[in-house]
Image 1 (cartoon, rainbow, N blue to C red):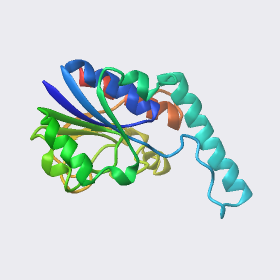
Image 2: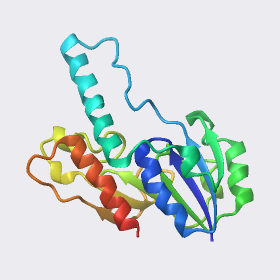
Image 3: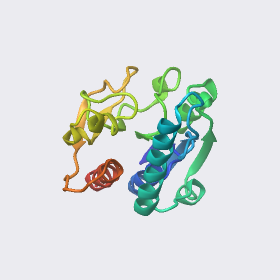
Image 4: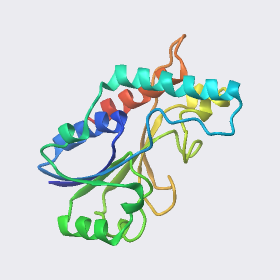
Length: 202
């Protein structure tokens, strides 16, 4: 069977998607460049908020590096047909034509931006997105941050759903939640969500 895979280039995306490709004979992977793992804080932050911003992303980087190691897209996808793109190239005629020509049986998405026209019209019927966050409660961005902010860490999890042209609105196929333990911090739980998702894929 043939897989069209849309992947981000962060370690969490490579960690999960390295398993997905094992189930298919032929894979076309489109790897979208993501933001920096340790971004620079906005200029308008106070010194206190800047300190918190840097601490948050530094802690996330450490936990994710310890959990997923320093995976490299070139190594993970060395046996696949791979196309590397910038975010603005995702929903272009060029990518739509590549997808159409490949004529995959199945599509999996984890780590790329929202797939829109003209690309979405050329995807196979079976097209699943892995969304970090429990839909419909947490859609969009930072979906493993807001449950902690709202003092509801039990709403940290992942959602496997069909993709549509609306954000995180497709039919839900499966949801995964990690087991929370006393002492878990925000990034520990985020990593547990990804580990549980990878386990459930099998």
